[in-house]
Length: 325
Ligand code: BDR
Ligand code: CA
Image 1 (cartoon, helix red, strand yellow):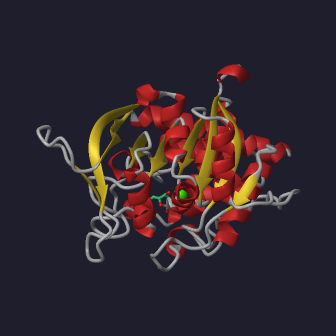
Image 2: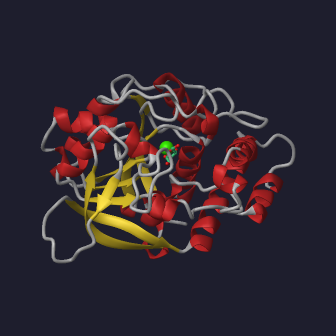
């Protein structure tokens, strides 16, 4: 896509890479659709030292000079075991080749302060893309309660009204820090949620994986990283989907091409009461109930082949960029 610099949407990507975070960043960078002002990392799929190192390695390997900031070391209240079964102990384990070591360092400063600084420097301009627990954004709002009105909008991967993946009711990102998510959604920020309702179906298939593998002869860290994640997918093992669901790509795919998704405005709440519903999202679809949660966009349908094509093209492009580095 050729988008002139003046029309490019300005983004801050907050993430916890993470194999699908990797795919999402690759999509954002290779699309050419965005001015990515900063990448901020949060603890989530792995400890912060891993997710921030991974975010830096990704930004650098893709040939960008996007500054990468480390943020929250722990969620606001919740303490949990990192999901090493899916993302490995580093958060970005590979079945073979790994990303080259970055040739630059993390940028100085805390992610939350950087979000506040950059949004205040460009009121109404910055779109916040959150692909992990919402801790950094909650901290940013605690630092500057007016922040929600100054961001252009928030798009995030998390939640889902269909059910959960880490518990029967809760999706990982919102379960990892439900208090942060509740605080962000209650802040009144204009938001669109890409939950498991759509992201469970954001899978690429065997042909897409073969195309990615064939994109680069010899060492292909992108294919190996995606292969690691594919081999650990419970949904593939259960035969529910034929390939890996790259959850975090959905918010970026929507920003690139909104026709790929169906969105409904619904009142959404996050459960913060300890118990079986901890971290679950509820969306009230009763049209006669005026209140009861933050009215946000909720993605409820997607053009799966369209998203898969966009994401596979991005991964192929990323694999070639990294091979030429
Ligand atoms: C979300 O949880 C993480 O494991 C993924 O990176 C994604 O952001 C999916 O539930
Ligand atoms: Ca993530």
